[in-house]
Image 1 (tube, one colour):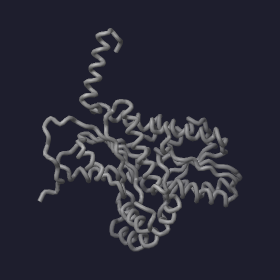
Image 2 (cartoon, rainbow, N blue to C red):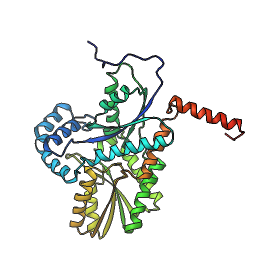
Image 3 (cartoon, one colour):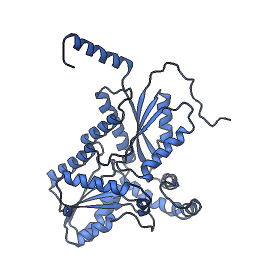
Image 4 (cartoon, rainbow, N blue to C red):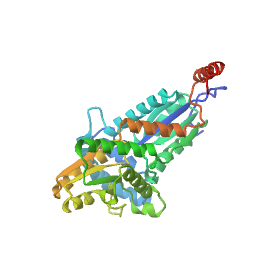
Amino acid sequence: MSSFKTEPPYQHGQAPRTAVLFCNLGTPASASTADVRRFLGEFLSDPRVVEVPRLLWWLILHGIILRFRPARSAAKYASIWTPDGSPLKLWTERQANLLQAWLSERAHRVQVRYAMRYGETSIGAQLDALKAEGATRILIVPAYPQYSATTTASLFDAVYAWAAKVRNLPELRFVNRYHDDPGYIQALARSIEQHWDTHGQAAQLVMSFHGVPERTLQLGDPYHCECFKTARLLAQRLNLSKEQYQVTFQSRLGRAKWLQPYTEPTLIALAQGGVKRVDVICPGFTSDCLETLEEIAVEGRAAYLHAGGSEFHYLACLNADPAWIQALGELTQQHLAGWPTQTESDSQALADSRTAALSMGAPQ
């Protein structure tokens, strides 16, 4: 029996249609312990995320982690859950809708959907939906500015796994990284400057990125370098000296050595060293989520204040900031170059307008 999915018959002369799939990491379906356990089980079973011999890790994951961690994590998720659901899902969906509107305003007739690497709504399900709608060319855009095998490559794995079961494949393009994209850097700088315009500038700006095991750097993962380049470009845009900002890494899991310096110990050291106010931003997250709203804005704040700090400001992620949506739109538009993004009627209307302009001697 064939392992390929059942597809509608091929239609001769079908006009090419272009689509964009905007992908984020994922979130539990709810803040219940059962849903959090299911989500963590899928996430932590990914060999891209945890590079430990499979049998050993299976015993650790199912014998220890999934027995005790879900209840603690569920309480944290509950503390940031909104009446409409997960903040990460809400922001990702809104970003996809705003990206659709931005492209439409510029006459790009493309279908934009969002998907999650883990949990709902899956990458495979959204690719199925786009293909059913006639998409023959699909651009995959990660929500991760910095490339890492633990995130970006894992996302691409899911696309390839879907493609392995499809007979009539659409053309696929992937955005690998945009850690140094001018629009992205500008959007980050603008959000910080707006905060400073209202609250004044702290003595220290802490840029906290999600951590990964240090071993990944030694094995050739560019994530560490791309985080530091983002930070350097952002500091230059803000005219900060090296003494005015720090780069840190958060969300450590297990006892292995991860990228350093770690965020919470850095915050404690700053407080103990007499720094009375810090501003913290998480440039690697484009949507607020558990790691920003709970780990930084709650736990990080508490650690800093308990150590003697006086004032802690968490600066929100880019979320639906218009400057970020513009940067995302321009990045997407750049990677769509050469693909048809207009319907036949749009193309005809554009051709007619050019013909009319030429007949009147207007410059082209």
